[in-house]
Amino acid sequence: MASASPTPNQSTNIELPLVQPQQEKTFLSTELSKTEVEVEPAIQAPTDDEQVNPETASQVDAIEATGAIFQAVGVITGEVNLKSEGISTVTIGRNQYPLLYIGQKLRVFQALKKEIEATGNRTFRLVVYPKAIHFPKKEQPHQIAFQLVGFDRGRFQDVVSGDLEDLEFKFSGLWQFIPVCPTPCISVFRNFTTERLEYIKQAEPARKVKFMKSSHLPLLWKDAPVRPFRFNPKVPKEQLGHPVFVTLKAKFLPGRNVWGFVALTAPPQETAPKFLKASKQDKATVQQQSKKNKHQGQRPLKKDHQSGNGEPSNPPSKPILKKKPLPSEGETENQA
Image (cartoon, rainbow, N blue to C red; front, side):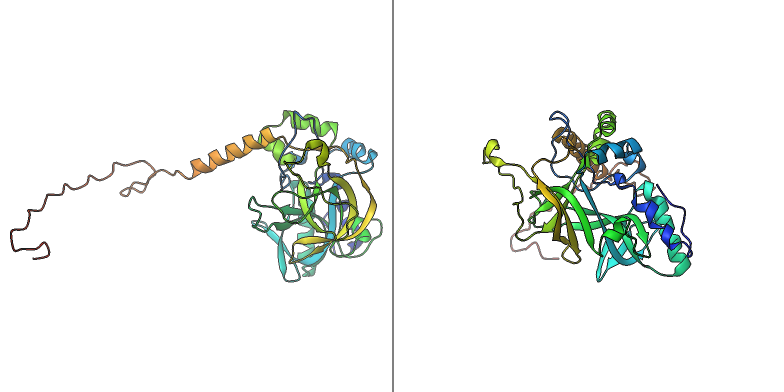
């Protein structure tokens, strides 16, 4: 659902339609069969309309009927700087973060922009999905961004922002370590539905992998009732165990770019809801194509120095050097 653009007299009509569609979460996921799934942790979520088109009312019902779902949603308050081109940002304290939106949330972005133009105020309470971007090198720190879902100018108890304090988030996911992050994470995958499965079967590898990308949100959890799962290739599979599914509240710690545990909202579960996960084969195909495209982009045509066009030109012929006569006895090569 999406609301019409707000006016200064409609403060209570802004958020309710905007935060309702939790099914549009870019972090929702579910596990396919062994033949279609099995991928290393991925980070960023889909960013265009076509990747979220499978989200329908029937899918929402299917997800909610199962009870537990993967999710990550929260509330932040900060100074918003919206840009029609380039990356918009939100500043929390002294820390600035990218503020993103998907095509289906364009109306939210436009409504927020009109609100800023009408009031001159840039500080807002935003409902967002968190995004953690990890890098292959473990010593390279991860980055945090937020995806805009909705905003309000008040506190309402029947919506997400009414249930959460500033910087508080609801997390439901797998409690585990990932290879590229020293801090254990809550891993949030895309919830499974049969409609999504059919969409994935027909999608090309690049779109398939992007659609099923997961989010791994670093969490500081002292005295956790269950240990975060850590994969060890040296341990036999039957002794390795598996990550536990947890549902909790956590508070974002700006500057540190991690979340701190607040409270469990449900007992830990040994069995996670079904989720979608890209296969290693599909991911390898996408990475290989990406490297190929990058390599081709690094081989520009040589420019013709005369005409400046991109056509290859004949290189100038090198002058033929004549051998110097050997110096006569008593002379040196440095003499004039």
